Image 1 (cartoon, helix red, strand yellow):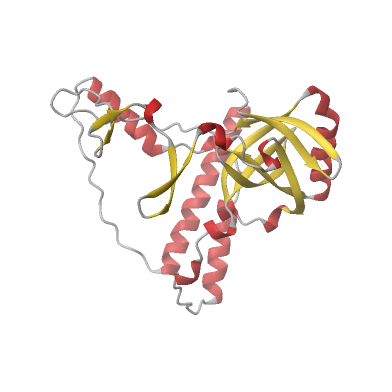
Image 2 (image 1 turned 180 degrees about the horizontal axis):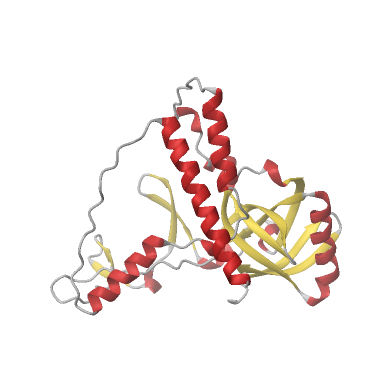
Length: 268
């Protein structure tokens, strides 16, 4: 686990729970760099001022907000520490809602909360009461130069904090057009059967990033000097809806049977 990047306290009512916050996810994708095609050297990013005709270093830079065309108000790094909101050091709980009420489109990042020793008992109480009521806490907290809307929920033995988009940040789906079509009862039954055949417990470790794996294989091939051959995909005919459902159900049943056979063999 990386170091905690934020320390403060959860506040709800008169209860204070000192906590530390950790990043919950990481990017596993292979990282590529831009190189100079001629010599394969990584170029340096430089800042150039066209007015003074000189190159700048990070020490020469300040942050500016453009309030009118070409007009800026300047902020120093120390100014950001003076932003007058209490959520800079506090996760301020403002409401409790049913977990199902928060549409997934609002979620955008995940974090783990760990209690300081002095806050372990109220932390556990907060976690258990959320489990018992089936609710999550809606709160606000400031870090990375913005105040985040977030929700806090129990996750096994800990509390997880998910940052949420504000309503203005979520685009409306009103421009998405769907022309409703009449559905036959048999089509609904077949589709329901397919869903039932494919329903199982969610086990995230079963799912792999096949694009990343294939990309890593290509990197290894290039390192070994092997030629990379493009795999041509065959165009497949799109079957009629009912036939597609029938074939899908058969394939799902076959897959389930194979997994059950494999699991039985592993248990023996």
